[in-house]
Image (cartoon, rainbow, N blue to C red; front, side, top):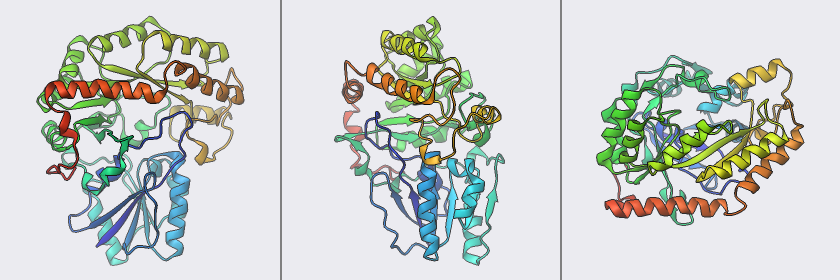
Length: 416
């Protein structure tokens, strides 16, 4: 049996460098399919999509809200041609009710241990409209290594430089951050994968550079220490979301190859200043993630925040406009307050104001968003700042003898 797995394109933001990472959702999903299923994967962000194919079943893997209108458009055309289409992924779960109008089947939840039933239903002609597992999460022992063999590797580089491969060590998040939909999608319980399987998968990835995409690595101190100790012999270089600001953990992270981390910056406090300093003292770069448009932001406050960012020696900064995605705390709050301006999902890119801010006009917030990008990178472009980070990691790779390891002409046992 042959399926076609499609990852639809989405609108790119003006200020972000144009590069593409190999997507994580599709390769994790592909690992849940029975081994006798043949997979054709198309990432529309890096290649043209042809609807003329011989696949028996079409799967749409959708991660972003701003991606889902295009996914619906593709699905509608396939269905017009008489093909069966199944939707899954994060954005599918956030927009399940609307997606039912564009799909023959909608799969909600995590796919491990559940795909054989869906495919069997399709082959019997009894495909259900909705497979709703919601927060009925599978055993993390069922999570196998992602099927990176479905990727066209040469499409994922930036100006000839190999980017990172994505991998995850856990699911769920015990935190409940106001702009995040993870509590709805993955639950408030921290669910680590078996450590030995995580390390085995990381070791099997040909690329020496990884992005550990867990919502936060700072959820369990002992687990975090054990993970970093287990990663030290791999000599990988990696990026992640938050790690614990703790002396022992930072030292272990550095030994394990921490390259840079994403750090949310919500104010101009000395606490943030010192946290960034401690990361950098351990040789760990910092990319600040800054949401503009919270209720305490006015024009002067945003200007002061940008000045602060320039003072604290960030390696990179990524600015977004607060966006009330479905099934987030902020989305529910703004809806109750009647402050959401529209639900044109293609414009929910986090680069446009889609709600009424409390202390600033929407047009002025967008102006300050552009000001933030342009001011922070006035002295050195985003591309050059990124190149500096890559030069640092190349130097470290050469020092420990792993520089050639990310030559992806080598096939790993996972087909990475």
